[in-house]
Image (cartoon, rainbow, N blue to C red; front, side, top):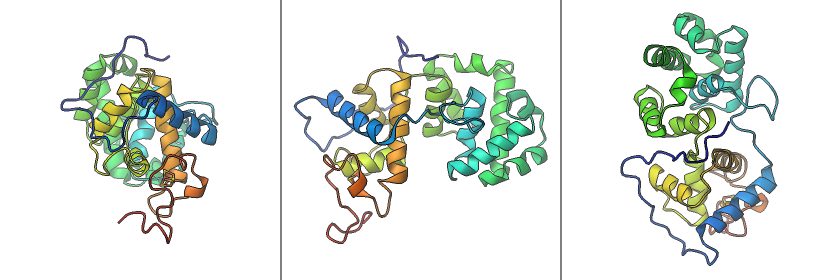
Length: 264
Ligand code: SF4
């Protein structure tokens, strides 16, 4: 299900347009972003996010699996988080009521592959407790709330910041919200569009203003940006010669001997 028609993404307080360092192209920003989306899609193919750890692509994670994965993947590689998700599933603990009932010392060894396992066990339990106490254990009902209300609720929970909240809005609640992250900031700063320290919500406001209000498209765009940032436009030693954005990037070759260090 995709909540795309008539459902507006929440506009966080203070979110305004970022200062753009490129002049608007003749075709307009929407067409410019569409061109980038198409280049990335051609290079990497559909990403099928949020990926299920329990079945191969194109399987996508069910809402609680997605949320557990979003908490577990913080500060670790996805492969480690996926191992933890599978361990929870094999123990029958990949559902709200089961996590709520499980003692921390049962959860912790299962999610050890995702690191910070004590903290992450607490965060999983806090999320489950919230669903039980505020929504009677009905995660679907929680996710059906008005978008701004859902986002505000998520941000009250420990370990859920703007990026994780927006991933949950997009991939679990199927709302047309495009999550931002460090990859988005780095890539679009190098392309020449944003300042390197552009604000999260300002960056998101730009993408929301110039992409169709569709959850599937915005979720795919975020996943494609992740693929580029993870495998090509790396912080150090970016692989510009293999980059699908090489023709439009202002810092192509960054990190090479001629162009200087990638991150001064
Ligand atoms: S050309 Fe290089 S610096 Fe520019 S987006 Fe691609 S990998 Fe990043």
